[in-house]
Length: 146
Image (tube, rainbow, N blue to C red; front, side, top):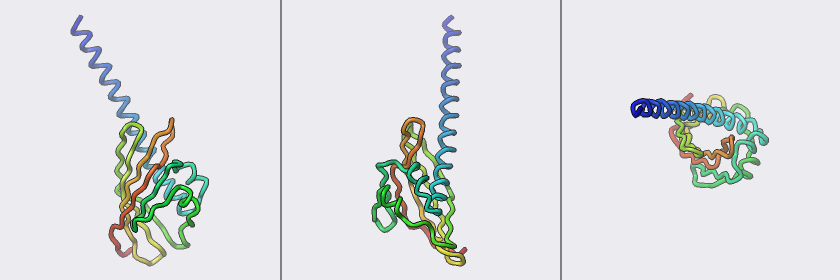
């Protein structure tokens, strides 16, 4: 009887771990998707999408040390014509209702100009079933030719 109870406990623990891992993988995929939506919305100047993605407490620290709030970011202009940005080297860490996404934003100010890499770390909070960006910190990386 003790052996059967022990095996049942092991089986239940394995199921709980598998569900937790599946949930974490889903959260990671969601966060990567939100990062891409954020980059796309910022490029287009899509304030409605940015408003949905950013937490009301949002604070961004830029490479020069300046800080912007959600309201500041919502009034920022879209990317200039010919500019582009793409994300790379994304790493996601989910810690319960908080998550960190780090990576590199490859920004090209205009066609034919050098690409500038900005390393970033974004902090997310889960509010109910929704992830929101609470904080972002960006540093200047390298500059290279396209």
